[in-house]
Amino acid sequence: MKRRIRRNKLQSQMNVVPYIDVMLVLLVIFMITAPMFTPGVINLPSVGKASQVTKQPLEINIDASGNYTITQNNKNIPVASLTDLVSKAVTMATDDTPVVISADKEVQYDKVIAVVDRLYSSGIKKVALVVKQKNG
Image (cartoon, rainbow, N blue to C red; front, side, top):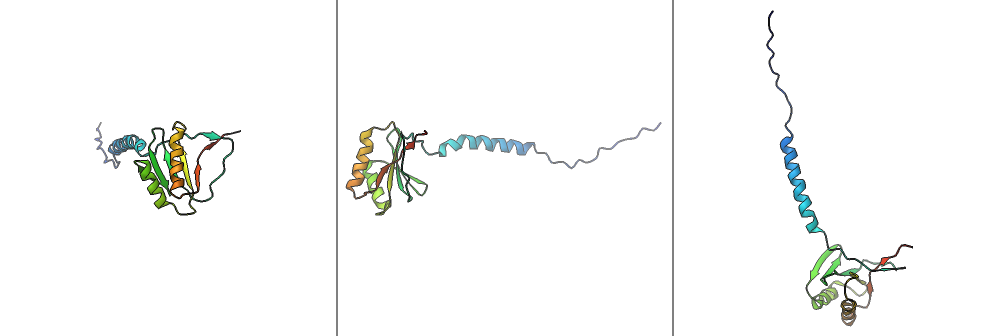
């Protein structure tokens, strides 16, 4: 009997293992860097009923450690001191722009009232506090 010699056919398959390795490395990089880009979370106090703001406000954030940030049109601007905060708020707000203050519930009451007082004395009259509404 004659033995037939089989020749290996050329396979036209793509090796995807290197692509999977690259994708896993990119996944790890994004998982590590993603938390660095999230803004600080402010834990707001809650009330029974809260009114809604009708116009796009200028938002002043005070986090739990007492750092200030101004937010307008989804742009966060960190501010170093209360004096800088008030001067930036005056330049960014117009006469009819409401200014809302989002302060973490762990922030001292005195610090929030100092911001409100400085804003009122600088000529901004529409100042409000942001709170969470209680369910029920």
